[in-house]
Length: 131
Image 1 (cartoon, one colour):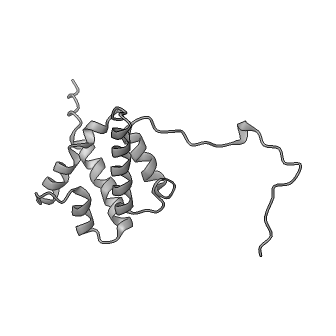
Image 2 (cartoon, helix red, strand yellow):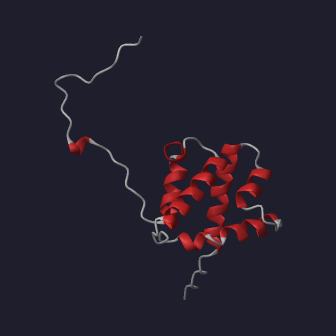
Image 3 (cartoon, helix red, strand yellow):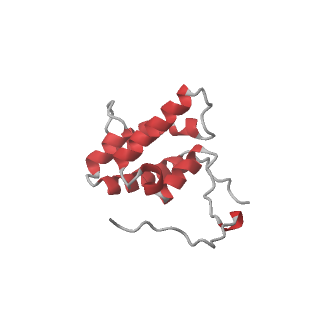
């Protein structure tokens, strides 16, 4: 049986020394946090796990009668964007389309973020011309 490790009896813990990650307050901020540390949020780098987690998050917020996170409504157009991108219009959903082209689940999650960046850039108004 392995020996149980204990902190030293004279250990001092101070709040200032604890590094806590900030809680994202927008939908795309949350997606950015998952992109940075997928293992912390979904257990491993996986498009399938991410898709299930995201569906669960959105369902739980709806059941709790919480309003959408700022920016969440913008994400609703992502499925149509992926359909247009791959020229594949059916009811399979964005995750299935990405997974079809990227069989490795970790690569598929990377591709989700590439497409998400592209989608968000396509929704930005064009910059005003300089005079």
